[in-house]
Figure 1 (cartoon, rainbow, N blue to C red):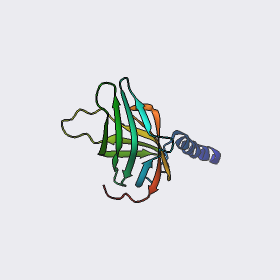
Figure 2 (cartoon, rainbow, N blue to C red; figure 1 turned 90 degrees about the vertical axis):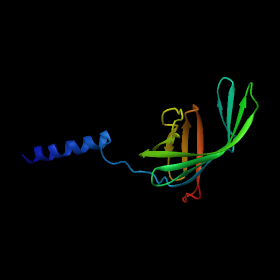
Figure 3 (tube, rainbow, N blue to C red; figure 1 turned 30 degrees about the vertical axis):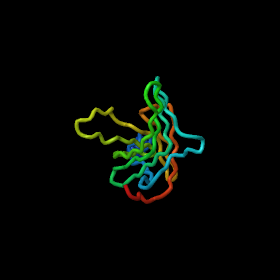
Figure 4 (cartoon, rainbow, N blue to C red; figure 1 turned 135 degrees about the horizontal axis):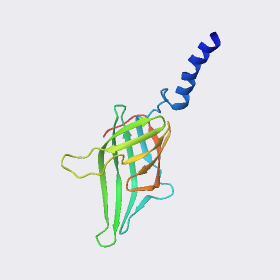
Length: 150
């Protein structure tokens, strides 16, 4: 009789492990990450628009908020080239090593649905993809465990 009881108790535990029902370890997200541009700027290409991320910084807080700031160059076939400095609020959510970031859309603005950035994050690095061009890979490295000023 005892082997059946042990088997009955063991099967749900094994199934829970295999199905991911147990809590997954969460990476330490809080801190500042900068885009690694050692191989040149990240480039997103659309039909008549080329977007180059010259610099990009992600500052994550432990409360699920983040700020993305950077310098982006827009090269358009018919309009004047433009370089902009931007700062935008985000929300982030982690599940295991996966992270998703959602741009906080201003009231009455037309924004695409989330996620806007997604990928994997670890203690020292993040590898993300952006909605602008999901084929492009953005590699960030942690420069500080502190968030710093927004």
